[in-house]
Structure formats: C-alpha cells, structure tokens
Length: 301
Image (tube, rainbow, N blue to C red; front, side, top):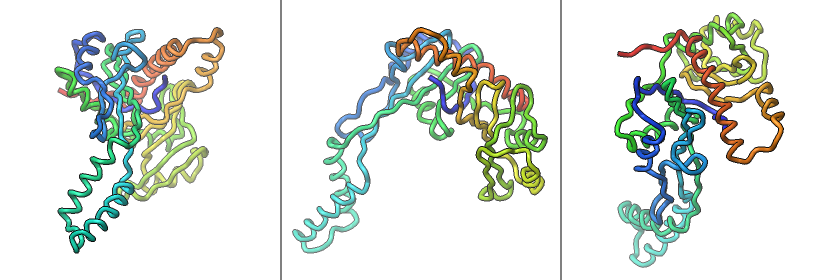
C-alpha cells in the first residue's frame, strides 16, 4: 500500500483524537452505494476490513469510497433527439428550450437506474504524532472531496496546507542550476521548466541528463523549475512540483528487493499492512527532510 501522490496538510497542534473516536465520527458519513436516482455517492469505507480507521503502528489509514453511475452525455443526447422527433410529430412544431430541458431531465431519470456503476477509493494517511494528513491524489482540487468529507464527519478539523519558507520553484531552480540537491536528496532525470512571465512557455525533459549547458541556458533566460524528479537517500523517487505537490512516488530497488527476500508468503492483509508500514516509515523520514530542504515550514499564528 504505497501512495502514488501526496497532497500534504498540517493538523492542528495538540489534536485530541484517537483512532477509535475518529472511526466513530467517520461512521456518520459511511459509504452507501448509489440509489436508483443517484449520479454519485461518497462516504468513508474500511481501507481493508473492519474499522474505518486502519491503525498500523500508530499510523492511520482512511479510505473515501466513491461510486459513480456511468451515463454518457452522448447517450442522453441521442435519446433526447429521438424523443424530440416524436414530440414534433405529435404537436406539429419543434420542442422549445424549456421543453428540451424538461425532456433531458426526464430521460436522465429514466436511464439512471440502468446505468453501470464504478467504484473507487481515495486514501488518506494521518500521522497523529507528526501532525500530518496526506491524501493520495495528484492535485489539490482532487483532494477537496476528502477534505469536505472529513469536515462533514468530524466535530472539528481545522486543516492547513503545508507552506514552506522557500518557494519550491525557486529552490528547485537553485538545485538544478548547481546540479546538486541538498541533504540526502539527489536530482534524477525528469524536469519541467516554465517561463515566469508566460506559463504556456515550457520545456520538458524525460529520462534526460539535466547536467548540460542547455538547462542552465533556460534558467538564465528566465525559466523556473516547475517540476523536478528527485530521489531521497537512494530509497524513494518522486516528482516535486512548484506547488509543493509530491507526485510519482516510487520505492527504489533497495526497498523492493528487501520485500522480495522476506521469505514466507504473506496473506493479503499481512502484505497490505507490511507495505503501509514501509511506506509510512520511509515518508516519515522523507517529508521532514524535504521541508528542511525548503527552509522549513512557515509558522502561522
């Protein structure tokens, strides 16, 4: 259970919460499948089985279940057009805008119960000791349903985005111009640079050496790093963005080889817990190191 991405939030200091009480509060908004007229439902579901808060070594895993009905707009449009032809033949003139709107609503209600459904889960990890909430989504906008569901379920949860003293874009540009990242980090071979005064002007490098003269010329011309592939301690690779989004998280061979050599085969539940413990253990070291590399967190009053 490795997160692919992380949107990082700061929990309130001295947050008075236990896994058991959190599970009880999340049950207020437990997942329910779509009803016949629901286009989408969402709610908290057990990440594995049992409790809504899966506790592994003091690290908590949550799962927001989402079910959507798959009703393509093109299907609704085609049925509406066929019905409109029938209505025109009956009344002698084409349906007006209001009539077509009512027809579309009626057709949607008729087709919804027959539409297929698709389920997915969005995972969130809480480190209660360090005070972080990490959501496995590629953007802040896609993390918003999780934040909204937490606020609906919990009595109180004042969250803040983690902000750093140094701008990630400026810091990564510094690292790249000097061909060296700070601390235990190293620069990999993926990068995106954007012009500060024209965001549509971008240069991307994928699996390409970033030590050449060409890179420094782009920086000298005013471009800033918006995405940079880096590794931490030769154990975890990731893509850092200028919005402090951690993407494309991948354990490196030193971790995956260790897992392959553990001997006896594990059950699905044991493997899930082992992977989650490994992931949280590594990220609990990586996140503070990354914050330090970016000058630390901005202290808010």
